[in-house]
Image (cartoon, rainbow, N blue to C red; front, side):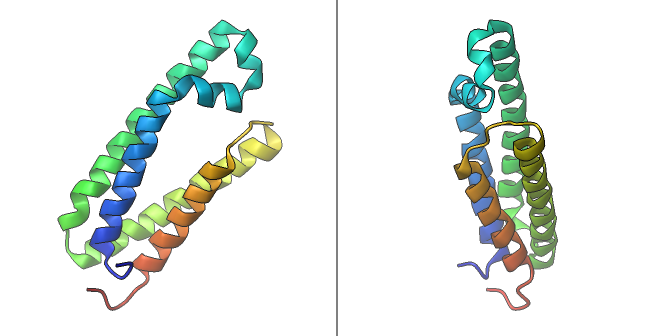
Length: 131
């Protein structure tokens, strides 16, 4: 299962699509958790919600793109997964920066999901022999 780069592309695409849907459905709650001061400031809350929607559209686009790339040749799928691993690593770095230097509350679940995506992407992209 995890030796198949095309399956992994589809799986990561679905995870990103689900993440984007949750950003839309729980935009207010996520904003209030990340920025507790926004609860008492309706303008800040609306701005945060708008940013969640913008992030959701980008995540949905990338998830759909990865899902639809599941039919590419193995070598291209492996390169895409390496790129995903690099991109998710950058996301983890920015989440860490936001947590420690900007005092933004980031859910541990988000960290766990992205760590798994980094490891999965790099692991599958490095497998020489695939199904």
